[in-house]
Length: 103
Image (cartoon, rainbow, N blue to C red; front, side, top):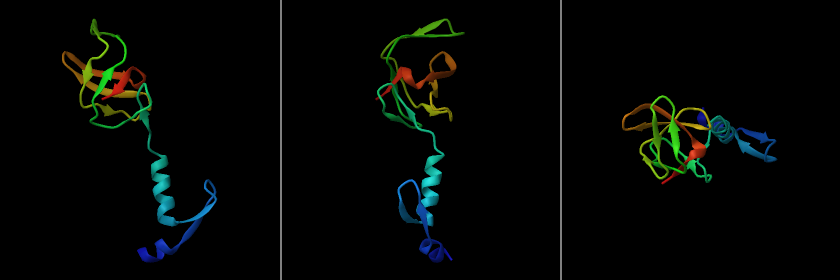
């Protein structure tokens, strides 16, 4: 049955080409993913290490994270501008992607 599904072709209006149904399904799945980019445009992924591009005051912690501070093993939150981080003495740290640079 999968051979029959692969032999079906669908017209893709975005590219103006006939593509297999499997390729169209893969494109649709990729379209639903959110891309998170850092301050210089690098694509971020879970587990990446980043450094801060400016000093940031952390609300509620009474602490300032200095420029160049390295944050290891980030997690994407599903928002295209927020990343979840772990940092010593600060639990639940969420940073905006515009303030970090991928290492």
